[in-house]
Length: 261
Length: 256
Image (cartoon, rainbow over all chains, first blue to last red; front, side):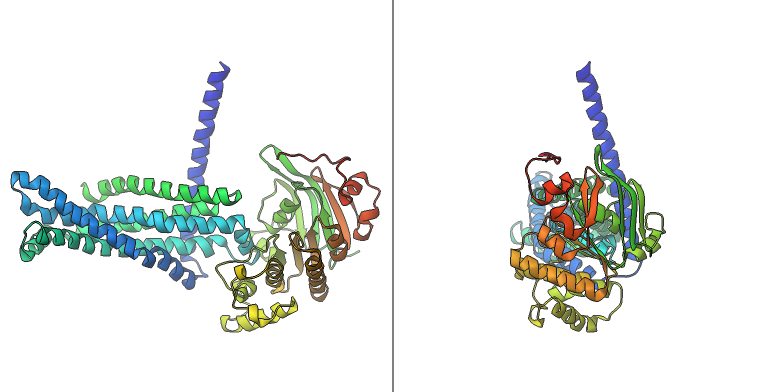
């Protein structure tokens, strides 16, 4: 009987903890977002975060997109050649990259790169009292640390994904023309013949949401970390894991909302 | 008798089931220095963090200039707390900024100074803590512990606060550097006429930087008196603590 009660009690504690955490996260997100629109603004910090999230992620995202486009062309050729549908390869590559793989893979890569760094930096600032020090120096840490990162994430990811779209198509183009025997002209024509503006735009909307998620989970986990080096490590791990899972889950939700009418 | 600069009544704070502050009463008169002593985990840091607004107490009253900051509007509370300068235990310097940017941080945040003039002002303040202009453009991590402490002190005094808090200002420094930092602290609070609260485990330091002392024990102020009498006080708790005796009324909890 006691065992059962303990089981129920610990289950309840977990549920309560999770609900509390979601509430905390929601308040954190709301406060962080609201600071984006209220002065004082910190252009210097926004630019710095933008460089961290966007500019320094360029090589990683570019390589990911290029190889993804290449492998997509190769894989779909293997499948489609079995029923003489090779001509669909160009469309498959461009639609998969713009609508789905560009934003998701860029999101996952950036969360591993920039989200982790964000959590580690804010976590270290927390455990060394730097966040408290901000408060004592008449500066709101949510405004100074969190808002610039959220804004930078929301702006940087769509730009990265725009580039990923181009490089992904280029990867498919390279493999199709160099290896699979397509003529460059035909490939490009069939790439753009079925592509609509909304395919690209919906991908960029996804990217903005993912950028927000990465910055939010990075800041949230870093901001509330405690307990020294171990706590910072744990914060970094949960920042990446939670951002990745949220990206994949939100990807489904957004696809449902944006594409299924 | 004039009004205390800081007046605390019945301040309570518990974390979960662990009661840290259990009804603290303190008066700090303008221009005087108080040193708070007590074992690790007795809530000294929680006390000053409550005054700073970094920790929200469960109940009680914290008055600055006769106004209760816990009941004041957020903007008024921010204003009242804005007169507090804080020296953190490990400095808490911003490692992404240079030394001068750290020192001028509060002035820039309060818009008391233009960015173009900030570096010059920061060098002026650095001079007050015995550092020359050469360190202004270094990163905090390039400095020794004693120098970091000086920069942190410079940052705390830059906006000439009416109230200063010092959290273990001499911990981790050699005795000579400790005495130097104490001297700087006394210099600064004398010059600015600040009211101060210091936390320390260093009895020599306590007597140098404070006028009065308060002993925290079991969540309350168990003894208070002139800082000069710390080592001669007959109170058994103070006597055990100041003389570092392993046995006495204070039983050190090994687990928190």
